[in-house]
Length: 321
Image (cartoon, rainbow, N blue to C red):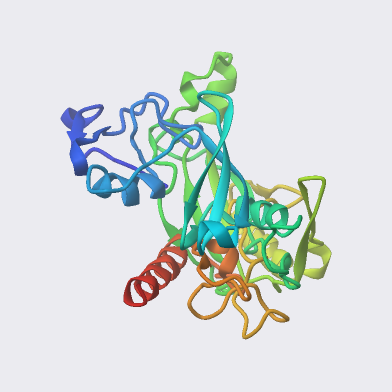
């Protein structure tokens, strides 16, 4: 996601109109951050893709959580039945379609596929489901910039990427904490926070981790000790601290905001979940168009790669309609 950053102070907080007449707001630096955006300044991927097609035949059901996908009964025709819980009414409902695209985000896509292979009307078996999971080598940290002339609160959440000499295999980035000044914190804490900048590192891990599902809950088998990328990233952070003369540290246990794989691309059902078109092996008409299909770590922010894959899947579906 990215913030709609104003080009001048006069534009801060101003409302603009996007596709289909949807209103959005430029960042006002009054709470727009990683924590959310009250005025809609975050241009999220779902908004970017859905806004232009509103009013052009697409139906969006918000507050709906898909619980499982089943094969349609022969008497009902080909395709799949998508069951979901309507959180607005609290009732269960379903829709049927000849072709279904799953793009719920890697973890939700995996949860949904695991839930959908069970039962008499479940999807065809997916023996490779959950294999080939990657955390994209994500490592988060903080850079204490005592010398910074700009407050972290007045910065953007991301200021871009950079490389550290001697550690070029690692992609690093830095950003601020705009919006954190609105939290009910003591002044002394805020003055310390405004000198802290968020840093991150990414690299290519092995992609050999796995995901399982028990009683509807996912469990990930991922051991950072088997991933040399984290030693490289921590070394890069130490080099950054040495070069800048200012403290830089990483959290002890990595966590990722870029999980990929688990329903990866493969030549057959034994090696992957989807084929080169994104169609799930043994389940014609059912596609995966998000990061779950990626066969390995990108080593950088994967959004553009996922978007390219989704476009590829969509193009293939359009030409085979």
